[in-house]
Length: 288
Image 1 (cartoon, rainbow, N blue to C red):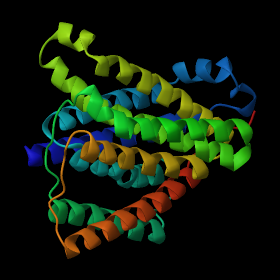
Image 2 (image 1 turned 90 degrees about the vertical axis):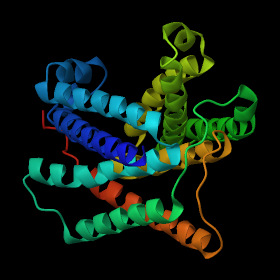
Image 3 (image 1 turned 90 degrees about the horizontal axis):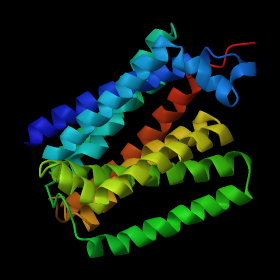
Image 4 (image 1 turned 45 degrees about the vertical axis):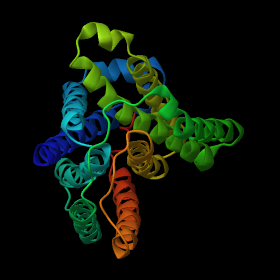
């Protein structure tokens, strides 16, 4: 099942990369004077490129759910960071430019760090669903951090506001990933258990809330501030929930824990660098 989960996670990352690049390309073709309010939405829904990106996003989520159905959060979510590795050449190709040597090096570093983490850590499966009581300790901490981010965003402006909203988005999406695993398990029992399960409705709230927070973050600041924060926070939150709520484990002892810690740091740094490069390469809005 581990091999299947890895394959599905990589396919999901590819689809999400295609969706992201296509939607950014479509948004970049909207003139500045139509980029506010419903004007942006009206232009986007008439764009075949935007719809292609939406299909990519939807397909990526479905395949991600399938990956979580057979693999652990500790395995699947870090692999979804490879969305950046797929997006890098796609953005270069659609933008008519070459991949910078610096970005290529960091891409190799990220790929190597993820591979070593999977080989050394050997993430194991835990529970598909956990009792509500098991969610309370970690969930309470995440709620406090989320509210803190929202309070900070309400009181500040510019990059601080954008970064706070981006971290809040990452928390929502990390919770969404953990709940997706539970909802996939509920779905195997039939429609009635799915509709009666509390996880289903919290998942809906996390999805809608995360989408709103993401758009608010993008509106509050540039992608170079928001994209790295979201890309890093989401897998970290999902991994935390996998460890503390679903009982997933990393098989390591002694010096291996030190190495895994270093690999996590390297992965975060590489992800941040590549996310900033990806944001810098995003198409600018078209002139009016």
